[in-house]
Image (cartoon, rainbow, N blue to C red):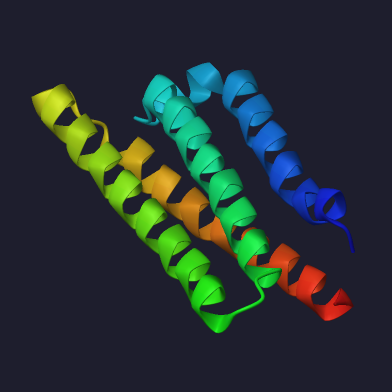
Length: 128
């Protein structure tokens, strides 16, 4: 499986969630989800996932164990630090008007994106 096919589920999830977020914009607001925060967070999580995917794919092609481990840990730390900084920054910026349902929805999407990312990378590694 090539890189483009491995990324297809991630892209489809991104397009699908954005489409559903825009279609159900008002309905999400009525149940207490700030859709602007949700969609912005979704784009952020997607961006982290794509960058992480490319770092891990680079690690799969590494010639040494050190380079492989560097890409794995680099990917993990990047997602951890930038994700935590985004949540802390949002909570500090929003203050009392923070929207925890949108934050938790994005955390759930983070887990789902991570699952798709690992599945795609495992399919690539099986072909090698």
